[in-house]
Every structure is written in C-alpha cells, then in structure tokens.
Amino acid sequence: MKLPLVSSKALLIHALKNHYAVGAFNANNMEVAQAIVMAAEAEKAPVIIQMSQGAIKYAGMNGIFSIVGSLAKRSSVPVVCHLDHGVDYDVVVGALRTGFTSLMFDGSPLSLQGCILPNVPAEDLNLRNA
Image (cartoon, rainbow, N blue to C red; front, side, top):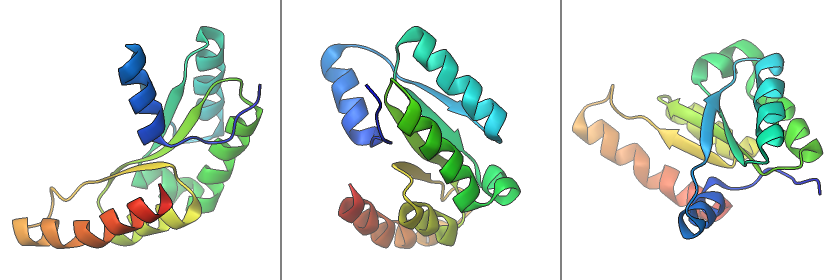
C-alpha cells in the first residue's frame, strides 16, 4: 500500500496507543531522504523526515518538500515531513502553507515576549491545517 504524507499528530497518537516509537531523522538532500525511507521500509516502520532551515535554504522550501512528498507517495510506510527547529516565523508559516505535516517553532533565540507572541498565530495555522 502506498501512502501520502501523514501528520505527526495522528502518527504519534497511533504510536502511543500501540506502544511503539517513531524515528525522526534529518535530511539535507535527496540522497539522505531516500536512504531514510529505504531504511524505514526495510524495517516496516513509520518515519519522520526532518528538515532544518539550513536544508530549506540549501534546497528551497518547495524543493525539499517535493522530494519528501514524492518519496512518501511511493513508500509502503507512513512518512511525516517535519520542519525541525524553525526559528524564523516566516519559514514556519511557509512550511505550513507548502504542506509540511509537522513543525517545531524554536523561539529560543527570542526574548520571552518575542517567543510567546509568534506562537499564537502559528498555533492557529497549525490547527487549521491539522
């Protein structure tokens, strides 16, 4: 069975209820993403493919998403496309609008006030796209 990208929320709820872990691995290019999916398929295990802002800067938002999305469509295991440690609010919103199925906004470089304020609209966007 071939699967599209899945949400991390649904996958992690299933993993919790069924007592298994889900591996999350960083991919900065097509070859690493391919290797991650091949290993997940060999283990018959779902997987989270994580991209950093550096990977997005290198391959472009649409480029890296297209790679992971294409691999997921051909994969026999569930695949999540995750933005890991998104420190730039515009990149986080861009990832959601592009179709990433999971993200982590990292407000650690910001002041406490600067960290709290951007999370409100990002949370709203995430709920609308869940």
